Length: 169
Image 1: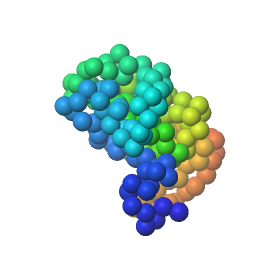
Image 2 (image 1 turned 60 degrees about the vertical axis):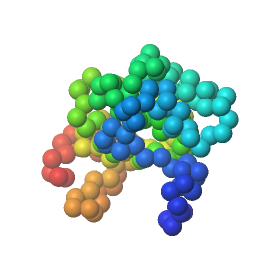
Image 3 (image 1 turned 135 degrees about the horizontal axis):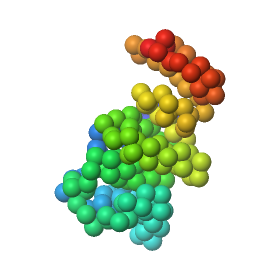
Image 4 (image 1 turned 135 degrees about the vertical axis):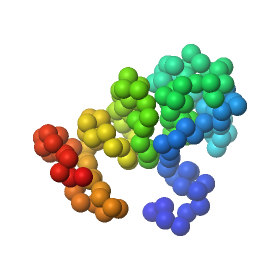
């Protein structure tokens, strides 16, 4: 139970949040941003190891590790936000609209990355996403909300079989 815990305690318990806006330090390099993502990790060798795993998952960050984050495209900044979060090796990631405002090609890459995180890193992901098609490719369960209330909860396979979703909104 995390209710009532301080933010730092929630982080120590493995909770991480990736907001929909670009949550990077624009004046710092990609590498410096990633290292800040691991601020609570005291072991420099472990930070370097985690950084390399992020570069493996998100190669564009490795290619641009010396580039100032504020000069990255919107999609690359979104990937950097994700990479910063992965540096903490969370158990639960809350992702808010990861596809918002991105070009279709980048949306595909971000969603593939989220799928890889779920499948290969043993991380639970709570995804808030308006793009139903992309969310269904990742989700095990789907919850549809209207005016702050859950109106439908079902397996993603059942939701996908519907084919049409407009009636739910």
